[in-house]
Image: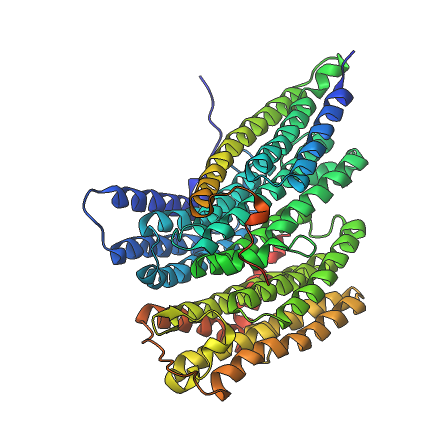
Length: 484
Length: 113
């Protein structure tokens, strides 16, 4: 008779609910009768809301579960909630988008839920195996989703480019994991942590392993010099998919970095020495090249791609700073980044002109005349991305730069501040077009639907609430990061 | 006698061949094969590491068996996932071929800026 280990199913309740929802949507999509899009959206939203309720009611446990496979600490509970909120917003946006573009909506929704499940698997993983499965579940779903618009040549091209570079980076990630396994003789992150602290691990293997893992994950979160795929994929993929690549997969990538480079349950700073230095360079290059690239873009999705690369640079500053403030700032900025990025994409999806998407920046000229509300929301998101006071982006950047200064990385913080100033140019350029330019000839903006207003409104509420009352989240983060 | 280092050398060489293949070849299908080579190089390394204690021919402890099981499960899951990756990859490539009638990555250049 085999003894089964103690398992607490409650700790993976949100993941289980999302899995069941995805399978349910898959089943109803297979029914012979045609299912209305609204029913698919509502089923998926219901599942996401139930998962969110489960996630809110979890209590953090600072030990591994499922025989060392998962680690349900405060950080993972927090990240699960963020990812679920993001999934709900993406569902609202996709509902509208599918009205105008020939994507198979049932399958699309299933893949979206699987991608979210992959991200949530990363956030709870305590083992290289779990982490790898999460990364692949997320990536494989997103490869297919970005090629889902079969009528569009650029969508097909985006999925090929995303797949090839994504699979290439997976190769580095897996080889890095193989070397880590060899160096520590276990795939469990907690045991790897204690092996490193005991000094009982073979050093060259370990360093090479961590470096390869960093390269692999650097592709996923598009750190310079591993960012080449991002602008093309962001531009070509269907817009809601772009939004989820920008927000969701970046949060998941940072969750993976956090899991591997902070060693759950031990500390946030076991490798102070060399990792801080390597990530310092990546962070510096990413901020400079990301912001410089965004300056010359005329396509909104391409501009947001470079903007998201640049934000990856700010976020990775936390890994250089390597202190508790840095960890809290990282978690706060991930929430801010989620709301402002998704909000900006929600507006891009909601606003259509003469029945077409407005994808170049001059297309938005005169938007404020015809739709003052939507233009106002877009302005809020752009100000927050730029880092204007009273928005979430400002508080998050301040906190991140503060963490870097605390550890005496003055140059890094200075470059952060200078590139932030530079970024005002390209964000404000859109606002100038929306408010100060005459609409182009014959341009009539279509009515903005309720789903778009709700998605953008919720995101704006998040951005402003975090900007004006950062204490809301500050206290939660302080409580969650205590166990580290 | 063949030991751990030989397996690691083989896996390192295969990995480098995979990386070179991805960088140098222009045919999407060949690139896909090269990526598989990289993943299988990792598999060889993990399998070799998990049998590492056997090379030392000493007495095996409980921990050695744990490591062996752990590594083999890891290999098994990487194999499964890489099969799924090929499935998705071929679908993506077929979609490309239907749209453009080419699988040469140099001719896929609509998105630039």
